[in-house]
Image (spheres, rainbow, N blue to C red):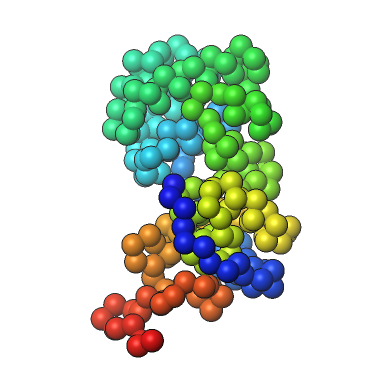
Length: 228
């Protein structure tokens, strides 16, 4: 994840206005990965690295029918997991990780997904971002998972400038009003995925453009940017 050009951070008042607006538009934002329990959520997030949510959902539909628990996943075996997820990038390494983490959940955690960052990050294929997603979605902890979309939005808007994902995460923890923390990373990820896109942000339909420090703003299709 390349570091973005440094911009001046927005004020706390602007940050509050941004999240108030997000809340008005979508009070209960949801992630786009499909899952049926804490275990399948964990597996889906592990598989989503360098893959689209839609691609992961297509592959895991049958996988989760066959193996909705750690025990069933271990029984399926690495090759069996590979067969179900072979349309996903890096599927061989991911299959090994999913099989290994399933065995660890059985051996160390009674077959349950732990509600603990350190324990989650000790699992194969699980880093800070994955742990944050599971802690946030399943355990309702106000964590912020910084993916490429959120990293871009945090820097581009001035909401949470940072050279690394961890810097952006820590900046957001300070900037986001407490009442909005639980949903903050979903709002920002979805905003980056569908509006504040990497190559050409759709500023003309952005609900927070008045606060954003990105310049020049992208004009509507067919209209030139104003002269500067």
